[in-house]
Length: 300
Ligand SMILES: O=C(O)CCC(=O)C(=O)O
Ligand SMILES: [Fe+2]
Image (tube, rainbow, N blue to C red):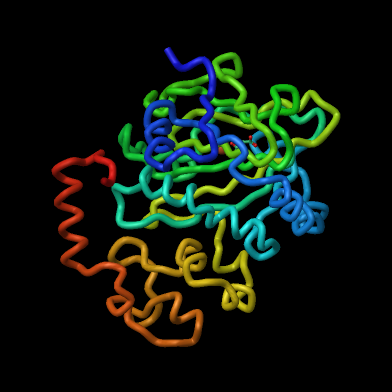
């Protein structure tokens, strides 16, 4: 039997405890992780881009839902959410069985009044429905509440515990519970947990910032190299760029030209991937051996 609700943790919770809750339920809310001022700044910086975005073409995207991407290009406040220390530490634990993780997408999801509930799904189905083994998480996701999330305004609907249910399950709306939360709170959920946007029965728009992370050996949903123009990317700090994908994925993925480091290449410098200290072939083999011994083990 699934839990009856999405459980909440306080903002001062340790990443270990947040990750433990995710392992148990597949979803958890951290209350008020950022203040109202951060959300005000985010809303201001993104207002023009949100205004310019259109409603979805189908039931999944939502006929009354506006989705706005490329948040890193538009907003310093969004960059800060992407790099939130507690979130990154938690993602590192949830996805710690792989060499590294990366940003998967950044998107404001604004469900307008009357917006229908989204079909219940697993986000990891984006990978062409590949049947990843139960327990081998490939994504760790966040939705930050820009407005309060209430049952009435279409709070994300979740089936707690369904991260262990496999791919064949079909859940209906009755099987879900709303992840209600106050503005500035964040819902974390794995790529394996069944969920969907809720039906907005209120007369105001429900806004969330969906920022997701995936294993760095998988393709990103939002193409960061083109979503964030090079002139802007060059001005961003190294740690953010690495998370965006200007880094090697696992041992061999994503190099530039003659085995060069993508971050250095962006800056017009030349450095081989080995010299960036992101892991040697020997370390990769060591990690692979560990994974074979304990395939679904978490990082320590
Ligand atoms: O808007 C939401 O609450 C969830 C959206 C979602 O799950 C998705 O677009 O994949
Ligand atoms: Fe989703």
